Image (cartoon, rainbow, N blue to C red; front, side, top):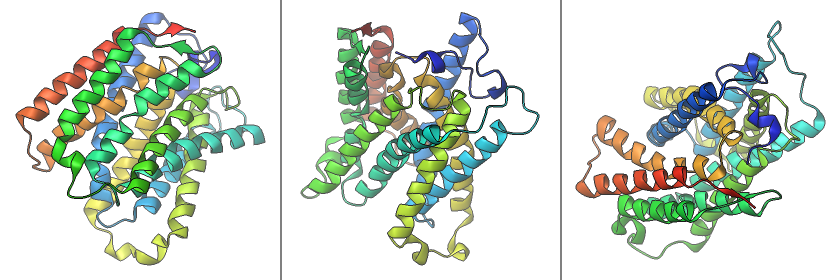
Length: 326
C-alpha cells in the first residue's frame, strides 16, 4: 500500500510535476514504463557489473557509482529556476535517507558483492531471489499492511521454482560445502533490501520523490565508499590499470543502473504493491541470461527457456493476484 505522499508523485523523468495530479490512464502508462525500466535495465546491470569489476574494486566501484548518480540527481532537482524546486532536505530527512540508503545499497548490494566471493553464484542468486517473499511478509506485517492472496503466494513459490530451474542444480550444489557465513550474509542482504524498500515509503523522507532518491543514493554510496576504503581497496587499485570496458560499464551503471533504474524503482514503490514491485527479482536473472547470450556469447539452453516461461507465469500470477488490506 503506497503512502499518500508517494502515491501522488509523477514519473521519475518529470521531476517538475512530481506532485501534480494525472489521469488514471497516464499513471498506468507510467507504471508500465517504469516496470520495463526496472526489468530490462536492472537485468542488464548483471553484465555491466561483471565488466566493471574486471579492473575496478567492487565496493569503491559501486560507491562511486551511487555518489555520482545521487549528486547529479540532487543538482538537477535543486537547480535554480526549476519549477516546484523543493526545499533542501532537513536533518530528519537526511537521517532517514541515510537509513534507507544503508539498507538498500550497503546492506543489499554490498552483501551480495561480499557473498559472491565465498558462495557459488547459483546459491547467491537463489538467496537474493527470496526478496519477494520478504517484501510481501514485511508489507503484510507493517501497520495497515496488505495480506497476500493465494494467487500471490502461488506466484512467489512458482518464481522460486523457475529460478531453481534457471540456475541449475550443479550451480546450487557447487563443488564443495557452502560457506555458511557467506550464505547468511547473502540472505541478510536480501532482507535488508526488503526492509529498505518498505522504509522508502516513509513520510520522513523528502516529499519530492527524486530528491528522496538522490539523498538515498548519496548517503548509501558514501557508506559503500567508506567500506571499500576500510577494506583497503584504494591501495590495491591504480587508475592506469582501469580498462576502457570497465570504465564504460561503470558509466552505464551510473546513468542507467542508478539514475534511471533506481529512480524508477523508488517511484514504483509508491504506486503499486510490494509483491508486484518485487517481481523484478525473478525477471532480472532471465534478462541477464539473455543479454549474456547476446553480448558475451554465453550459452542458452532449453532449460533456460523453460525456466524463463515459468518465471513469466509467476510474475503474471503475482500481478493478477491483488493483495488484500489487512
